[in-house]
Every structure is written in structure tokens, then in C-alpha cells.
Amino acid sequence: MSSSLRHQAKRLVPAPLWAAGRQSWLALRHAALWPAAAWHPWRRASRRRLATYKRAYAGRRAFILGNGPSLAHTDVSRLKNEYTFGMNRVYLAFPEWGFPTSFFVCVNDLVVEQSAADIQALPLPKFLSWRARRFITPDEHTTFLHTTYERPLFARDVSGRVWEGATVTYVALQLAFHMGFEEVILIGVDHSFSAKGTPNTTVVSQGADADHFNKDYFGAGFRWQLPDLDMSERSYAMARAAYEAAGRRVLDATLGGKLTVFPKVDYNSLF
Image 1 (cartoon, rainbow, N blue to C red):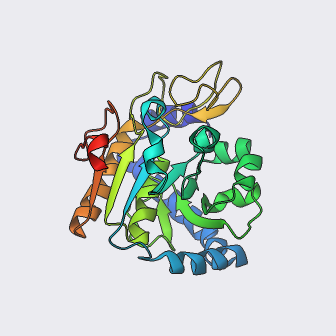
Image 2: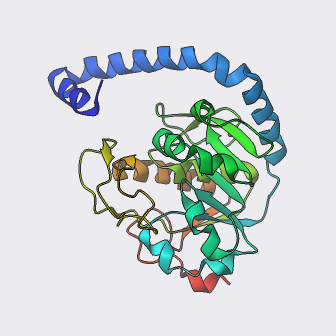
């Protein structure tokens, strides 16, 4: 069912009935997907790899690099010797920076499908949705995550199910927690888009991309989904609660960012 038809049906069906039907559908879908996500050889290998990452960076700090326009105005050179998580098409900036991020995360089906060759070639630890196996052949750098859209949670151990939370940044936050990072700092998470429309609707870019650090990020002809900022905020709040409950913290050093969930910090004060 298309996004527009789904929204129309939701308006016509009584809320309790819609909720019950959705939960039943999600339960059946999860049950059908679970065996392969748990026992396929590629997933078993990924789970073993994830076990080696568990608390491997305890007590250290990491930066999660969002892909908003502000990233182009951030002195990323200061992060060369820091632990960093890059996401989606962040690799477009690697030649300019002169170094890659420490880790790469991508769970969006459209990004994986249209950027598969680029992602396949990245010679760094890659954390991808299990769904990406349709386009990516696993190598020594590839770890598949069992990410899902339903049943909100914050996974303190990402070897099991990981909720996507409407933003790949949330997946990176769960990975960083799993790895044991004590302090995680966000940059480039502008949390603001000029593109408007129904959240999660697939659109085709008609020209230069004004919502990311590079005009070719989602350039002309690229298919992408409109953001769900409300759901993202919900997931970020869950991440903050999980980190603080564990005596850790997430800070937001994005230049001019609109996100208000995490404590703000001046980027230059961190070095």
C-alpha cells in the first residue's frame, strides 16, 4: 500500500481497530522475518562480530556526524584522531577531509539500493540493515543489523533487533552505546529540512540538494524519503534516557542545529 493510500485508510478506520490490525500485521511480519535475521550464516557472522564490539570502547568518546548543511561549515579536520560514525552518503566528503570516519552506518533501503557500489567499496567497518543483503555482498568490513521500523525500543545490545527510529542517527546512537562509548557528540544534525510533505513519502529530487552538506548528496533523480522529525525526536528522547540511566551522555555540538533533545555544547570547546 502506498503512503497516501495508507493515510487515507487510517482516517477512515476507527483508531482502536486500526491499532489492533497494525499490531497483528507487525507481529506476523516480524515472525516471518525473524528466522533468517537470527540464523542465516551472514547474520550469525555479524552477531559474532558484534560480540567483539561489545563495550570495546568503554570510557571513550565518539562523534556521530549527521549530514546536514552545517557539516560543510564544521571543522571536521579536528576529528581525524577521534572515533567517528558516518552515515548514508557521508563518504562524499572523505576526499575533501583526507580521511574516512571510523565506522559507517546505513539502514535506509533507498540509499543502499542507489549507492550500493559506493558502499560496497568502502574499506572501513560498515553496519548495514539486514535488508541491505539484496544489494551488498558481505566482506570482512560488513556487519548486518536486524533493524526494523516497528515496536520502539532502544537496543543496549545491537546483536538483536534494532529499532530505526525514523533516522539513521538513532541507529548510530545504539551502536555507540553497544560499543561502550561514554560520551557521544552529535555534529551536522541540523534537524531541519526545506523539503516539505508527508513524512516517509518517497520523492525524487529535482535538482541540487539544499538539505545536506553536499549539493549532490540527494542530487537530481535520486529517490529519498521525506523526514519524520517528530518520530526522530521521540527516538532521540529514548536515546538520551538510556545513556543517562547508564551514567553516560549525549551532547549536541551541531552548528545552529534545531534539535533541542540533547544538551548543547560549543564544538570548539571540545578540543
